[in-house]
Image (cartoon, rainbow, N blue to C red; front, side):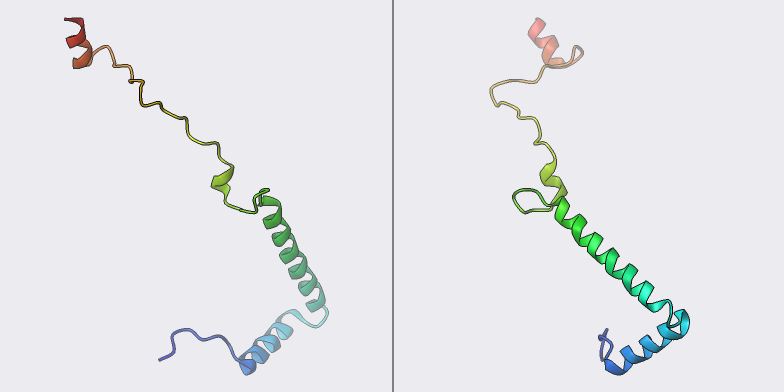
Length: 88
């Protein structure tokens, strides 16, 4: 049982014939030109996103989270039990 196979040469010819019938011979060069320019713009956009290190991960450009020192304690709120115990 074949799940999903790529189309063979005969299927590609049938697809090309259907496209030719749908769009006509005059529109095919325009469609191919538009598809080529879209692909080149997409590739150019991918290259523009890449940083100097060559990675295109958008999370790499985000600033790092603030650093919390281990020696400092967070201030307690006025109504917490720890603050009430410290007051006596």
